[in-house]
Image 1 (cartoon, rainbow, N blue to C red):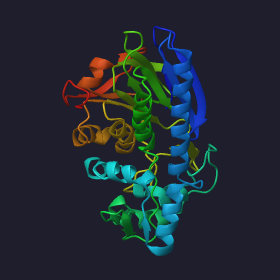
Image 2: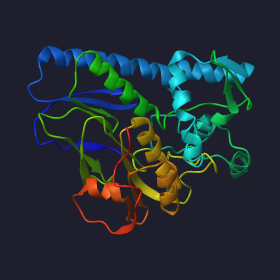
Image 3: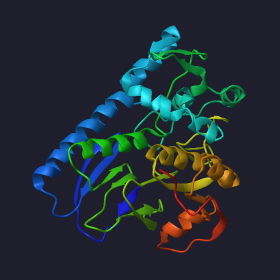
Image 4: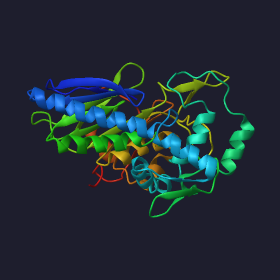
Length: 340
């Protein structure tokens, strides 16, 4: 789900392709040109390296690790993967297992290990999905010792961190910028954003696309806040009946998540925000409140398949609507968007 900048000032804006999407860096107007170029080089180099490390289907440190697990049942996790694994582990139970990086084999079976959409190849047969649901692959199947020698209880386990990798990339990007003295910036990875500092004394403002060519609304972001969204529009395949199946899969059932149109999460931890935006799509409206409470989300929004908004009290106070939408439920999970 894309985000559209709507800041009142006129910051510099540079964009480039990475992670199969578009990265963007905004710096406040008046930023020294030498500093702008240095920031672009440092951030661009870091994210390009992470693309080489974390890509789920093209040759990468992750595919090499998955191949070693499949061939030998064990592999040494390189440094590039250790933080992904560590940060993912608590999100599996807190999400009610609606987030699980053990879905790599499932994602491949649905044809979603691609950059070309929509997908028109046949979906997995129902028997395969029933077998998956009976015993899903999971990150919990991976056991790693203190030296990061890992073994898998499931020989076919393939890890895929796409549901939280951009969040970690943004967090690392913030550290990269601060290391060279950049304290004010807005980073965007495929529509997921993280704010540093401010925009000439004002908050960074971003808008949420409605997936239909318009803007649903927006938020003002303060230093260290991430705003992550997910939706079913750009990456999908069609069912035999013409229904749009999104690339977001339920790790528990093996099937596409179809109950929601889009989701958004505002949180100071970009990894949590990234994973939670996906989890809300999987959970759908029926499990919105349970997900919000399980993942301790103060600011969350879900638009269901009927075009109704499910929103937390914290998000209602922060999100500025540009067009009206019926509200299905408001959950009181606290007035704050998260704790640092």
